[in-house]
Length: 169
Image (cartoon, rainbow, N blue to C red; front, top):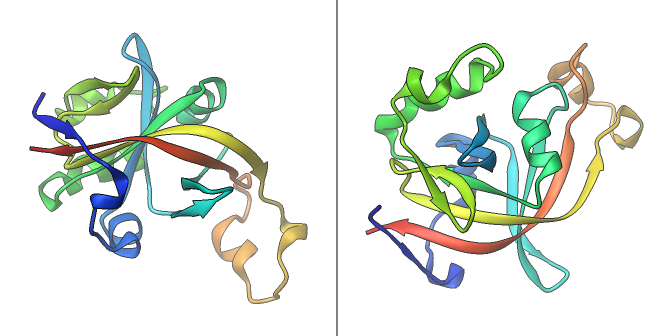
């Protein structure tokens, strides 16, 4: 594996582009049993004097159980050449297919967590706090619940401390 562990403060990137446009894979579980999903919603910042990633997972997603039941998970980022693989991981369930086989991604261990060798950057995250989004929490009436939820369940948010950062060498 050709990654080096770096200090988070040494990184220079636009989180709006990295998460919202390029997407990320959220992966929970261990090398023995894991699942991954594509996410394009999330935040990076500082909370409780810790560097954190907040991500959102619907409870009906297969990855949900892996992240919910573990202490840690990864958020990994890829170059444009992996867009097709990320699209597949966001539109197919690991309950119904083998995402590794279908995408050609290569699982690798990072601090006891799973990400993929094709990543450019891997964040190892330790869950600190979670909460469930709900329609009652919206403070505006501009159609967000109807546009993003409909009959789908609301997401659980995970505020997680970034405890390891790996970049491709």
